[in-house]
Image (tube, rainbow, N blue to C red):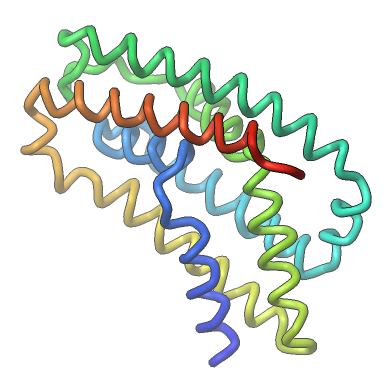
Length: 200
């Protein structure tokens, strides 16, 4: 049980920081737009990558850094593109209310969530390499560590996505959505530049 708790805390510490993926899930939650789909993709991806790391795939990834480099630059372009979209959306007050925002299709939500998840090399560095390395230190109990880390992902994304509706009264103000879009855009830009400066 202590190993599972260690996995939970380690996993939570890596995913709580506001990033592109978290910001997107938050926006979907506030707009009540296919939140379950986004949460399922985020949690499913985390659980899968954590399991791969625990199974030892991290060593294989370390031996092929060119793959992460390619993902890095694709991710930078995608993040900057979404930042421009967020800044542009902040200018359009007519779509800033949760009830009035045009609903996104399931396909759009799946594609965007998958992109924010898999085009970020830090996802592989954190879940596969870091959590994999830490978890494997527990030997036979490493899968308890993986279970704890997976539970952390489920807890966080469920809270972020489904709990966002409690902020609905605040989000009924157009200015709040403008600020949120601007903040999301800035976060995307900062993450993109941090990726540019990251040595993989």
